[in-house]
Structures are given as C-alpha cells and as structure tokens.
Image (cartoon, rainbow, N blue to C red; front, top):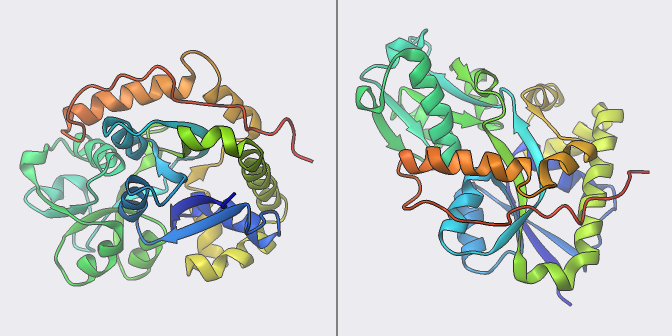
Length: 296
C-alpha cells in the first residue's frame, strides 16, 4: 500500500507533524509529508487527488465540501489567538486610517474573518478600502514593493514584515475562537488506512508533548523549515493554542460535534462574504476514532 500523502503549507501550527518526523515517529513507507508554499497549493493538490489528507483552516475545508469532496476532520491542530494579524506601513498607526488604503489578503475564509473583524473595529466596510487578492507567498514582496498599504498575514511572513518595520494594528486575539486549523482526510482513504491514521495522530501528540516539555530543543529542529529564530518561533506559539488530546475529543465528538456547530456558523459568514456559492449541507464532518487513547 502506498504511503498516506499529507499536505501542508508552512505554518507553525502544522509544524508538530514535521517535528514528529524528525523524532523518527513516522516511517516514510507509511506517511509522506508534502511541503507546499501556500494553502492555495495544498487545496490545488487535494482537488487533483494528489493528497490523501491536508492541514487546512476550517474555512478551506468548507470550500472543499462545497465542491463535493467527501472528507472528515480527524484533528483540530490549532486555534488562532493572535497568530493571524493585519500589518500596516509605519505611517499608519490606527485602524481608521485604513480608509482608502490598499489591503492585501488571501482569498480565503481566514482572510475574510480577520479583515471583517479589523474593519468592524475600525468602523469601516469593504467599500471603504481597496482590496487586493494575494496568496500568502506574495505577501512579503507585495508589502516591500509598496503594492499594498497593509496586509492580512501570519507567520513566518508576519515576523519578517514586523522586523522590517510593519506595524500590527489587529490580530486574532480580538476575535477568539473564530480561526481554526484542522487535519482533513478523504473519506475513501479512511477505512484502508485506519492504522496509519492512528500512527499519524499518535506521533502528532507525542511531538506536541515534546514541544511543551522541551521547547528549546523542539524549536531548534524547526528553524530550518520555518526560517525563523528560536525566539520568533516561540513567540509565534504564543499567538495560538494547540488543543490537547482531551480538547480534541471535545471538539470532534457528538452529533453534531462542537466543531461541526462552529463550521455551520462559519459557513454562514462565508456565504455572506461570497466565499461560498450556496448553503452547505453536511450531516457528519468530524471523526474522533483515530485520536489516541493516551499519550505515553
């Protein structure tokens, strides 16, 4: 049987998967981690059948459901608590000053959620700004070249821009619980890969435990992939919550599960922002069966 192909873009919240690999917890013949530049690339490969599983924001998972992909959420990886942010040029010091300015944002639910919160806090609407759609791998260059006055982004790009003088005006700590990253799996690959999925999640939680117990050693392993200093990586984890095994059981269990309820609320917001074409109908979204019973 070929290895399970798991795709991610570069984001500290997904890094425990790669940490588990570096700890020798995944065998190449069982699990193949596919590293991509952006969430847009991850979605593209998933749609093309080149990935069996993917680390995505919940809104990205909903776009796949809209396109008739049958999938299950088997893990809540992180909940943003400041890690997603709106950064502006040094001459812009307050949110109301964004009126008439050009703001770069990825065409995703996360971008819409963060921008919606920032504009509401500023007393502005989309009609008051110029919106420029950018994938995350374009954020850094577009900001430095003056193509945008502000950008909705996240680490590692956010750290680079702040180091180069960008000013943080708003972040996801002001909209708690609204931005969630999950691991999704195609329904058709679940049954033949149950043992591998259990190994995948077991290794993930062991890596999270290692990160919390020995953060300096853990982040030293992450530096090469993330391209950030140890200090910057540790700071990025202060902007998110990595749900525990017990919290994952809470999120994923029930009919409907708490995560499925949150997904319905998010789908309504996305429909309002024209990120979905039609209302979604899904009876089962989460599957907690592969969560380990305990972490050694």
